[in-house]
Structure formats: C-alpha cells, structure tokens
Length: 347
Ligand code: ADE
Image (tube, rainbow, N blue to C red; front, side, top):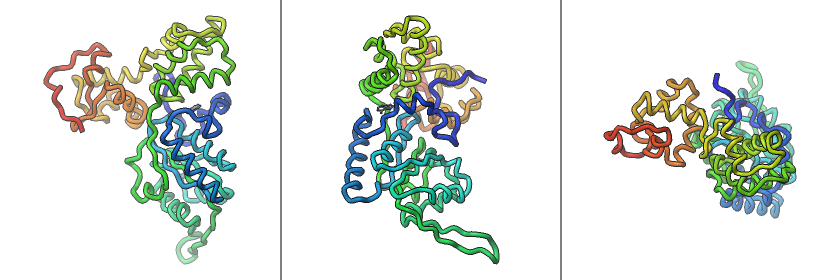
C-alpha cells in the first residue's frame, strides 16, 4: 500500500469532518469577512445572507461544486455562523436510508444548515425525500408496508441545504434545479494562498517565517487551501526540529522534498499517473479506467484529486479518445511524446 497521500482528499467519505483536527478547526475562517479568495462566490453568498437576514428569512439552498479542499465544508460552517445557527454535517454515502435523513432534518431548528458532502452519492431512495424537504419543508414518510402502510407527513422547520460535490455532472437535474445558488469553486490564486498561509501561521504562533517561505508553500499547494495548510504544518515540524523554528524558502523546499513533493506540488501519485500514461500507453490517449487499473488506484480518486490540477497546469489533456500527456507534462517526467499523437482534437 502506498504511503499516506499528504495532499489527498479525506479518506473517510462518510465523514466530511474526518480530517478536521483541532488545528484545522482553529485555522478555519468563521465569518464571511475572514474568508480569503473565491471573491465572486463570497459576494453572491454575502448578498443572499444579508437579504435573508434583512427579511428575517432562511438562507437559500446552495450547491457548491469543484475539486476537494477548496472550502466547501468551511463555507457551510461560515453560512451557519452568519445566520446565527448550527451546521449539521453529513455526506451522501452516509445517508443510506431515508430514516437517516429524516432523523437529522427533524432535529434541526429554524435556519440551521444541513451540509451534505458528496451529494452526488446520495442514494436515489433518499434523494426522493430531499425534494419536498427542500421545497415545501415537509417529508412524507411511509410507515410500515403492505396492508398496514400509512403515510405520515412531517413538517420541518425552515432550513438551508448546502450540497457539495466534486462531480456536478453526476447530479440529477431534479436535484440541481432545486438549489437557489449553484457555484463552481475555482483553484485559489497564489496571492490568496499566501494570505491564507500567513493568517494561519499567525494563529499557529509561527513567528519566524520569512515571506518567501509562504510563497514557496503556496507554489506547491496546487491552488488548494487544504493542501497549503497541511504543507505549512509539515514545514512547521521540520523548522521546529531542524532550524530552531525559522523557515524560509529553502527550509520549505527541504521539508517538502522529504515528503516527495516537487517544486510544483506534484507528488508520488501524480508522477505515477503520468508515468503510466507515458510508459504503458505511449503518452495516450487512454481511458481513465485503464490508467486506474494499471496503477491500482481508484478511478474516482484520480478524477477528483489528481487530474484537475494536472489539467489546470497544462500537463494533461482530455481528448475525445481519452487522457493524454501534453508536451509540458511529458517533459516534466523526461518522456518524449511520439509525434503522431500530437494532433488529437480536444473536447
Ligand atoms: N483557511 C482555509 N481556507 C481559508 C480561506 N479561504 N480563507 C481564510 N482562511 C482559510
């Protein structure tokens, strides 16, 4: 088994909060004005929140989609805090039965937030109950079956559903259309990651971190705050043990090289993925399932965690015929692309 992947998404699909240790919870922004980056989304949410508060209403249902680690769970907590309410956190695969959903919804008070991570994995039988809950704030629950079956209608307090997904394309239209606000989270700008890191370093009382250290971490964070903050903690450990708590760009490079992370933030799994396309499939094009089988990794993990950033930095292309390395991607692993595969059309 490969060593634990430092930049991976949470391993526990059923527990969105599974990787949120006390430090992460402390670092996380609590209010909208503390939130750095995603300006367009923050503005849309702030307007919706202000409007709801002004009218004394509940906030709209919100669908957030985009790669893992960009702040979907954090935003759910921020929205709850801004509404002065509580956030209930669950995930699509954890809600196996309608009664799981009903149990949570009936516990919620007016204006509370229900956060469902990986909402694309909500079982169809549970999804049916979500529609009337979102629209009419009620649930028609069938008790017993056969001759004794009876439907009880449970009235719910007005609540806000925040759905998060890495695969917006896998949602049914029926579900997607019931969200008042839907927004795609983008990878963060370098300056925003630097600001997030410097804020976190302050909270963690890291006093001797040079500005170029934040730059060096941000450059390796793949546009993702969750990764930036994990790397910051590896650097903090390294600096505490090796350099009296001081960190500069060189300390960062040394600390993260030990973790197998290169100057662009790519690590073992990314390189293994690119090497498989290069060595086994001549640089591509090749289907995702074939790559996944070759390196014995879950195709979903590759699609959610590995590919988005390789696509973003132009190392990978998705063509009609499958994935292929670009020249930059091939160069990065010292592979010479065969010339005839250059002309494949992109989607
Ligand atoms: N910590 C993690 N993500 C953050 C963000 N977007 N703004 C401020 N602090 C953060």
